Image (cartoon, rainbow, N blue to C red):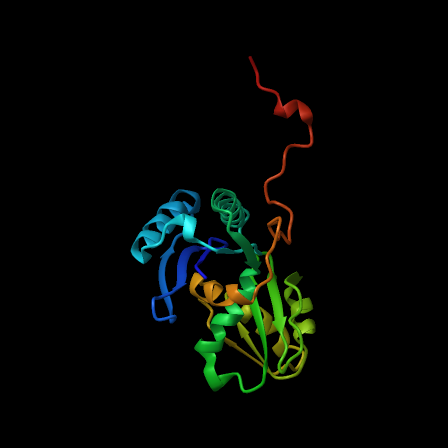
Length: 234
């Protein structure tokens, strides 16, 4: 199976190609750029370069994996649109994961034994005292859905049991938890989704069609309430 995975949901772009070599072993190439804007202009060139380095033609891609959010409106839209276009052109299956689930997967290697059976909460700063949060309980309990929550509500969801908070919103949730006697530890504040982890997850994900962005909040920019303001003067 040949997998193309990419993420553009936050302040970075990452692309990974994962495929099996002649001996059957998995091989992987990846590229990563930290950037606040310009996702649309850079994503396809990065994909094209990485595919060339892997020696794969686009017609050989079996599965396209993409993060569908939460994230910035532009970043999520760019990733989903690119995945749709590539799937249409190649006939490859599309699979999707939340950006927060991909980050949780990364934590498996980053935290190692540090987690010690504690719940994991991935929290990204959503501004205005809110976070994008997804909770991954300890044991075999299923992960909760990604949510947009005010910090106190996020702390209530995490609860008072021992937990690890990761991501740019971890400190915000930790402060709310500390105020009510929680036992969480905030770590990895610079964590962002990685296409490498998404490519690793891709074999376990069910095909997703049609791909839809996961927006948890309305856009910050709205059309004016007065329709006359939309008219163009001669």
